[in-house]
Image 1: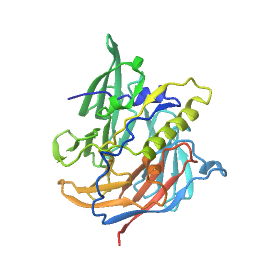
Image 2: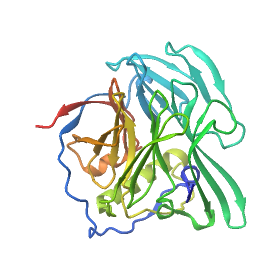
Image 3: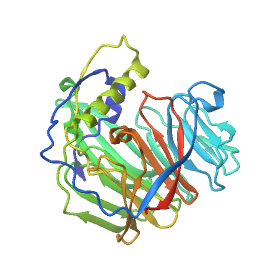
Image 4: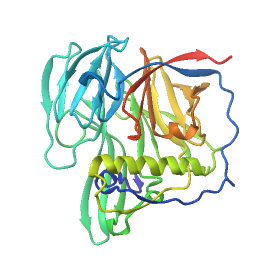
Length: 351
């Protein structure tokens, strides 16, 4: 069991538009890119700045495909799930506020409910029933707020049926928002449809991934000792500041009281992961300005490296969320400086 904090919920509640930029030096610069065997190329996108309502999104997250190949993603502010064809044509919306269940034909099956604020806030549904997700429980004590963040498998309200990993910490809200304190506070994870779970504890200088069977039995451990701290560039830090400013304006308005947020000057070693339906684990390497994936098989062997092809500034990619499955690859840009849309990508061999 780890001992650190996860303040993601606190950040959502208290973030504002005054930032501190720290550590802009480049003495710990990104290493040279690995051999890039494949590229992820943007082929199309869904979403418009002004137009039909079904193509205007507020906060799209978690893009994925249905078993038949339809494109689905949730809109956190509209409390709904959008459904599009593989070609990007609008089909319908489903869902409402809360966690609702639908079958593969989008027929309503029921709803899961939680009392209080300890409901899982990141979820990945699995075919075996229920979902894999993360929950954070908070309890005040004399030192601040004790936080326990848990990665587990739920099928309804209450304790998880299986607990894969847990982190404990104490957060003092009087200290303000300091991202350097949360370097090891997040859990990056993904799950296959069969229920296998992969996870990593966030870090700026350690690279470690674990894999578990649905019942929690470990079957994979990956560790790379060649990672070292890499500083963010000034462009990275400015882009991060712009993101939080835009987020604050959207959530609280320009008249919201300013708070001080200290940005972490270092890049995290792992920024995300997903499985592509072919027993391949895609791990986004955080030490590069570009979006670079190291792809493993389920035995932990490196298969290849892939990179997103993008003509703009690499700093723009810091807010991209990229996922994939057997039907292809999807991405969203979490920055609220741009109109929201979902990107379709394809994997091609790098010439």
